[in-house]
Image (cartoon, rainbow, N blue to C red; front, side, top):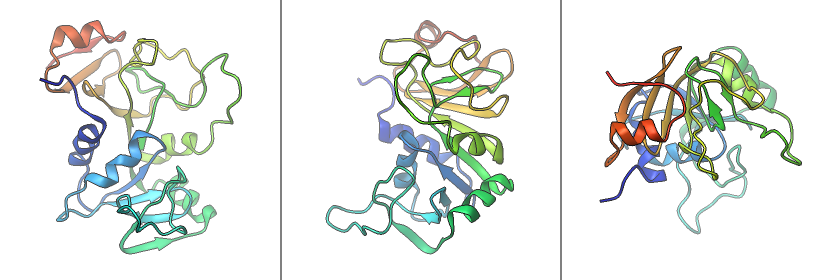
Length: 213
């Protein structure tokens, strides 16, 4: 039996929590997969900061429109009624508090809702924090979708962030391949465990304190 969710299973789990008709920004990385897992009978308006409101699933092979890309510069599709807007208008939507959800990737998240997702200390190269700082404070709900541990095996759910912060006290929930975690101030509340993952394993692979309701 496989333990944990695959990337697509994780995206499907996040998609299931998005209410119909919500306006949702998808960050670069794992979050872009969420658009592929919205049921046909449910409408979610995915926003991409490069100027799309109504982003659809990834195109079928050979049917990509070179003029339609998401913020990760990957080919995308549009749902019926989608709108293309100026980059400035797209960020006005973010900064104006009109996003119901923002789904971001993450490097570290603390139980008080702090997030670091743009810079590893000592890492060479890389740009600035970019639009992540706007998305992390402009949305009504901030969800983080990320691997539970980094490549070295270190937990990304931490007691306090040690990487440069993107925003403070903003994250609502965290989704990893091991489970779903709600930020509760002093600990993460475990709202769901992935298949094959028990409490002992979660605690072993997580630096931050966990609570199981």
